[in-house]
Length: 170
Image: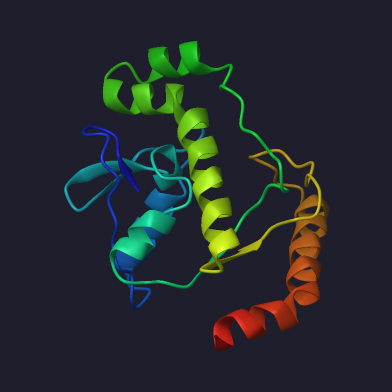
């Protein structure tokens, strides 16, 4: 999750699904402007993707040398600058560090995707991603639309099952 006062990415090892773990799960998925700030561990937190869209480098730093990266965008996707940056800066003016991070999030995301691709080419990362844009909004609540996207993810994973098994067996 992202500490919105310091702008730091905070990692927690959630091991048992306790109430504390569930609060961290909620914090890690709390989208700016859409979700309430989650207070946990003495910190005010929002989505970890604000600062670290895919924490591959963190996992490598703690010793995970083979990683599966699950993405929601197809190959070639490039994140554009968020048009709501002026609104974000106004709404989050009491948290300037996180507002700054959100203003450059597209740059961080695109750099991270380049790194993920490089690691995949080296054979240390397997990427699972949809074959094309999912065409769904960030805040969709339509059960049929969510089921449609779930089914795309499931089919993508099923189509890659042998490749996933081979990667894990290496």
